[in-house]
Image 1 (spheres, rainbow, N blue to C red):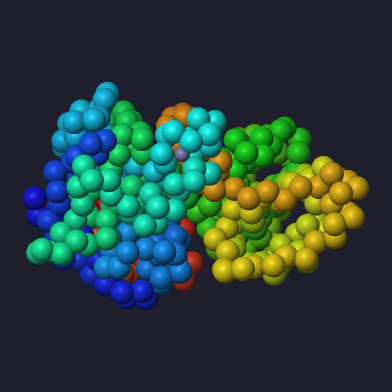
Image 2: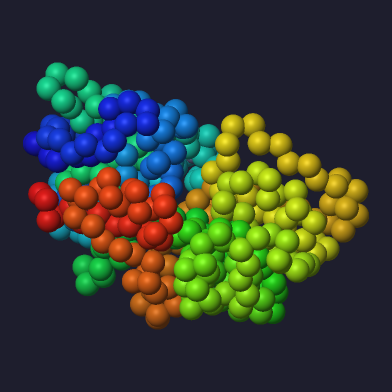
Length: 360
Ligand SMILES: [Zn+2]
Ligand SMILES: [Zn+2]
């Protein structure tokens, strides 16, 4: 079947929409007609060649759509089902068994390399393969092949263009607060970075009953939105934040912020590293201060959650008005993907979402 897909030819190249051929779903795969796909910072990291990806490649990993057909190994999903697509994992390792698939040893091959099993379909340009199956989806396209394990069926009344980002950016911020750190009522938290991940953390901190929710960003319009979503104080530089905080979440990926951030931790406080960091970042920490007061630094991938358990929780919060996605999302026709990416990079838009059906 022919589809329209945004291909990046080489590292640093543009997203160019062209016609590719997609295989039928094999094994555990589902063919999904993509309705909407969020633009995530990691798409730009992959485009720039800063992650190991197979160029030319189709990125896009916050896909949402309608199942059109299923492979022979798929159970419990059928054509017509509405689904959100998240990252992929093996389902067999200790991390997957513990419902922490973000720490699956196969995270890199399944999400960045787009490795295909012999019975799984991919994308073709004439006789040549195009890098597909990125984050088990490659959803900057009118159709994508996802997997039994990385789709979540949702009620058909839900707005896919608002909920597509739950599958990466939103679950990362909210999961870090609610599932990994388990912030409790009355506690304090500082969130570094007011992009989609940081603002999802703000909304989750409010849900958890934190009494002090500090938000740091360079862009004041993002801080204004942060206050609307639940931040109790905002800052444009780290030295404006007054510790101590029970929790600090870094979503910026800026290593220079981390050493000073440790100095803002309360006793038994935790710094969660949830950003995308440059190669080999080194952070100086006061080992004695860490040890004597039981402070911790932890890494968090995708919020440390299992999407198939956590996305339904997020949908409950959305339905109850506690996750007002409409305040973060701006939609673009698929053909305007370059503009959507640019608006994300400049910080003008928190969460661009591409609408595929307009250009099918
Ligand atoms: Zn696994
Ligand atoms: Zn992402």
